[in-house]
Image (cartoon, rainbow, N blue to C red; front, side):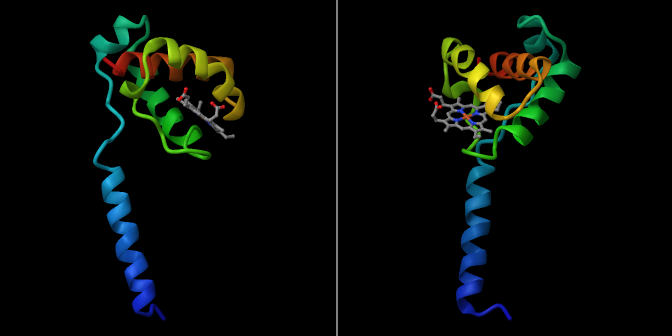
Length: 101
Ligand code: HEC
């Protein structure tokens, strides 16, 4: 059964999840997608790819956490780590660049 320690752990976990949810990944707009030469469907799908494929080793950085140069420099290495296809890597980059401003 769930003892008092288990219960405390559960409460802690809920607080942790709530804290993380305080800074959700931005939802792209069509204008943002167009501004980086992509489209809404592509960057919306890439948002899911980013959330799913890039959260295994570290917390997801918010797109605004890095400037454009850093994202461009980091993505090839991280895409390899996350085993993304070249297309997925390009789309995830478009997503973070579209929503970081
Ligand atoms: C296999 C583990 C792994 C996966 C999967 C992974 N990362 Fe990373 N990531 C790391 C490690 C380790 C570091 C820190 C050291 C480094 O920069 O290589 C890091 C650092 C970063 C940084 C910080 C760079 C900086 O200069 O502060 C960003 C941004 C990042 N990752 C983005 C991503 C994105 C986007 C993806 C998905 C495409 C991803 N990561 C997938 C392991 C991973």
